[in-house]
Length: 442
Image (cartoon, rainbow, N blue to C red; front, side, top):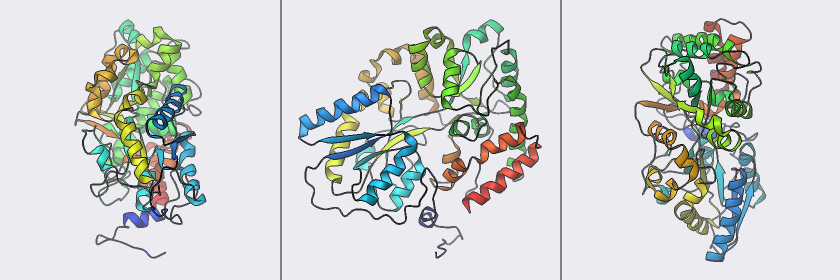
């Protein structure tokens, strides 16, 4: 394969994407060709959904019936878990029966689809609105997806225990460790941040680094985790996690999303990270605990900066012989029906579009009213330019698949494991992580 490089000696985005085999897909997209756009009729619109909550599935069934009644066009909704969606998208293209609209959960996958001319720009749906920070990921001013929500990982804490112990909201890592240690009492543990090689660790455990100004890449896509500026910061983070680890319940290595959620809802940990679904689950299963949980951003080592761990979901429109009707459907979904959709998980589906926060239809929801204060804080975190909003897969100078490769290789959780479980020095753990990052993006 010819090594296409730009004037700075960097691999071009196309060359990088053609060589990508990560982001939930075992094969690259380079063998896929966009279906020809032909005269468009009224064939069914095929919609791939990865939001599988009971209320969301019921919404899509009702929505499909309503749209067919309104337009005469059938909408066929297939629903699968997020980690299966990209394979479903590519299999549909290969089989000659592509989806018209699809739910995509990683920006690297959007980039791969756009680079192969398999999806169409959605500026006509996005340009009329204001959006939260770091969510549209434009490519040459073209927006190729419609982000419907943020899934920010925030730190939840037991405000009743804080009041009982006389604790203050921590601004530094030392203060956070001190509060976590103060909340260890019998079976009650001080904190839970996953350290296993899984998505939960990638999402929940590293925003402390972002708050402290750590970056994985420079503007030329060189790995800088172990340079003279980043290395001491990352080593200090590992030392901080080594102090925090004894406050966690047994099994942090195996902890996944459901374990963290269940511990928060049960109230067995003083601190843990998750998105808005915590409030929905607690309101349903443990209402007293729902009232005792509050949120805070991640803090840095010195008390200067705050961060949240990025998470997001969105829709793409595939380039098919049905793109015109699909765009008409998406216009209806993202205007007439967007509030109804967001209400299927009203706290978890944190709006990416800023006008929705002022929409009285959206505000007219029991859970949104119940957790109004927390929702206002979530709103602030995506609009305050001083809050660092990033994640492993959104690191780097521009949207790209290379951070996604780092995400899926679990380099960062392995760095934690080397420190906390294998007894490696912090410096050596940083060196090993940086070496593996260079290997996986090569």
